[in-house]
Amino acid sequence: MPVAPPSYCFVAFPPRAKDGLVVFGKNSARPRDEVQEVVYFSAADHDPESKVECTYISIDQVPRTHAIVISRPAWLWGAEMGANEHGVCIANEAVNAREPAAETEALLGMDLVRDGHNELDILVKKSWAPNREKISHKTRVW
Image (cartoon, rainbow, N blue to C red; front, side):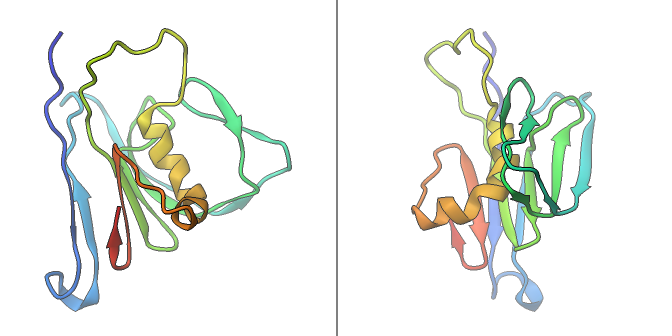
């Protein structure tokens, strides 16, 4: 089985980044002929107990989603990377597992990247330490 090439994230904070800006980016290990979209989703309120259709499964929808800009392969719901209206940036990095994937459908890492923009308040309060996603907000990187 071929091993996926590495993908890396980077963050530059002032004074390394000009004009007090934070620069966040990543390279992609996706196939070169796969269509990548840059998509904006506005903030929205959702009905209680509503569901959101992710790439392979449905999960509970949060009451309010933040406005986000994401980069994603066109065929899936999730995202390679993105930023929300509060300046929170999240991206995934390729991880080569030693154990085979489960045969059941589940959330993809890229689904977690997109959903993380809406759950970040909870994650930050719990001092969440992701092992496959990189998150930055103003002056911190997790």
